[in-house]
Length: 241
Image 1 (cartoon, helix red, strand yellow):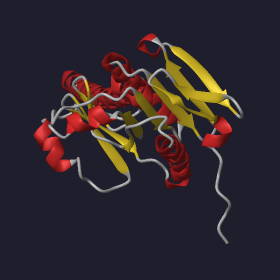
Image 2: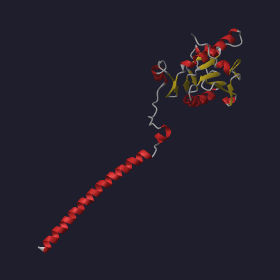
Image 3: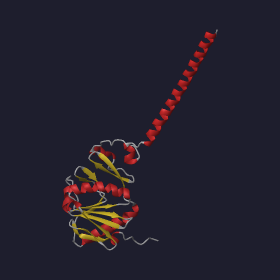
Image 4: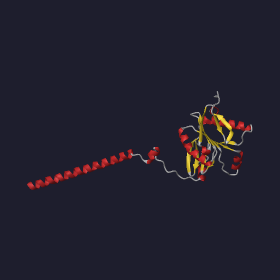
C-alpha cells in the first residue's frame, strides 16, 4: 500500500509539473509575440524614414498613354511626364493670376513698341531632354513658335515659375536640373508669400540673385528688354467694388 501510495503521489506530481510547463510555454509564446509586435512598431522601416508612408513603386507610363490619360485632365493639378514616371503639381493659385497678368502686360507693351518679339506661353507642353515639363510661363521666340508648327520641340531660353508653398519650392529644385541640362538661360522663381523673386542666370544657371521691393529683375541675356521691379510684379489692382 505504501509503495502504491508513493507511486500515485509521484504520478500526480508529474502531471502537475506538465500542466505548469505547458502554461509557462503558452505565456512565453504570448510574450514573444508581444515583443515582436512592439519591435515592429518601434524600428523604423525604410519607407517610414523616407516619408512616413509606404509608397508603391512608380508605374512606368508611355508618352502616348500619358497624353491620353493626363494631358487634358481638368482638375486642380498639372501633370508632367518624367521619362516614364508621372509628376503631379498643384496648379497656380487663382489668387496669383494678377502676377501673370502683370508680366504679360509688360511683355505686350514692349512688343508693341518693337523692343521684343515672340510670346509668353502659359503652361506649355515642353520637353527638356527626356522630361516633359509645364512651366508656369515660358518665353519662345517667333522662330521657335514657327518651328513648333512643324512638330519640333523648342526649349525656351526664359522660364518663370510661380511658387505658392515650400513643397512646390522643393519640387522645383528637380525642374531646375532639367532646365540647366537643356540650356535654359534665365529662370525666375516668383515667391508671392515672401514677395521676392529668385533670378537664376549665367552658366548652368549657377548665378542667383534675390529681388525684393524696388530691386530690378532682369531676363537678360535671354530677353534683355524684359525687366521689372519686384514691386511691379506683385502690384495688386484696385479692389473692385
